[in-house]
Image (cartoon, rainbow, N blue to C red; front, side, top):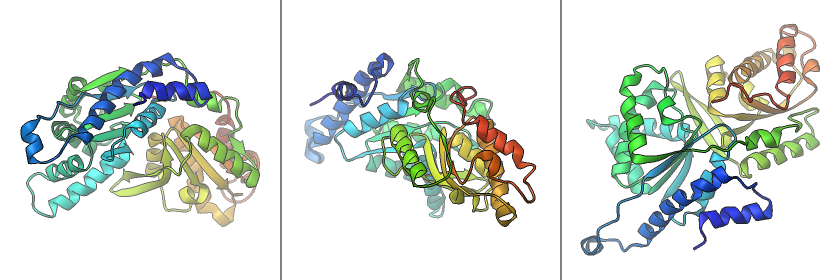
Length: 363
């Protein structure tokens, strides 16, 4: 069996990856998990098999944290792709928690005393490996159930591997009723291997550093260039839908992969979204690719207002923006109500194109 380290080294040799000692150091512990999961999948099933051989204790999971762009998501993909079992799932943490809340809502309709128990049981029956990308706790409802959820899954033998930009002690920092959340931090430290990816290189920023990130006009050439950026940052594919709970409703990004979201102007600004939606989007992703920004005027005033709000949210969150538009920022909105106020947005769009923009302020 080819080890994950050997797969990594082959990609380095081919030029697909750049060698990184910090990334290499994580691979052996991921290989231990892979070996366990594959050997478990090959074990005979049934009552007799249970009598003849006791199931081995699952290894601890991995909580991999570090700065933006250090390669956490890449290692997660490399690991999950290499594990030769069907009962595995890689999912964005926000999307998974939305599924849990939906499942609990349905369970409550049946009158169960503990709505989380049947949901966790169903997850544990379906998967032996759960790989979460971008764990962050910002919602009090997530904070109040995630500890019990993880405990149930781990006790059921599910191995959890997750990435995060923060160490466990900084999750849900300054959140409402945080003392009730602290036992979950203790659980992470006790039942998972907490590993900091101490790479000195921000590979995501390296790929964008000096690269064009604003394309005008939004023609076929711009679309091809953005396609290439998407492939460079994510490895390709369509991405998965990310569902964000905002004020009791759902905001959906249809294409998200490795913390990179891709959408059109109309996806984001033609729908009745508000500041809370855009703040949630800016906090959930690290790079937003937005295509086909049109010229703005009185004819699309509402869409223009939403666009201004979205840019403000991205700017404040230091979320990188890659965009294609009908024209350069200063010529997007030349006349009509709101044109004067758009000067600040144009300035921000220009500032956000700088090579080093977004380095500061990201967790």
